Length: 213
Image (tube, rainbow, N blue to C red; front, side, top):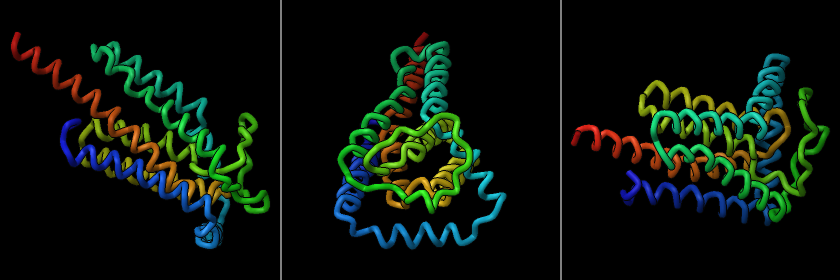
């Protein structure tokens, strides 16, 4: 998988999308569309959606998702994947790129008047820009990583639904613009693809070795 042109093209396409969206938000040409989509989502606001979006916020926090990635890495290590067990920790790469872009894109998030957030375990990290969404990048990473390893249609469908809800929820709650969540999801996928390929390559090597024995 790692050596196929299609695979490399997909990783590059995700990275290119992040770069293009970063350039777009920096110019501000998508601001009107961002506001229109956010207001459209909030036009269907109700208590059930508020609760679901706020609970979802807790799931995507960095101090929830990063330890989860560490637990997955430990599980893979115990299953004999060697260095490939470190693959889930590529989620730290999404964090690094996220923080870099949030310091440089100059794209402030939605104002407090648009916020529907009422659950907060710890104060959020204040950054000059809301692009890209860290929740979207981390949850896309973990979801895509799991789906790619499982390679089951039902898991893939569930993953797509979960990621779609993630993107909608982050905008609906007023924490991010649509461009933020699209950039975050592309960032997460750009790291999830090589992470999953690394583990699958390790599994294939283990299987080949077992057959030779």
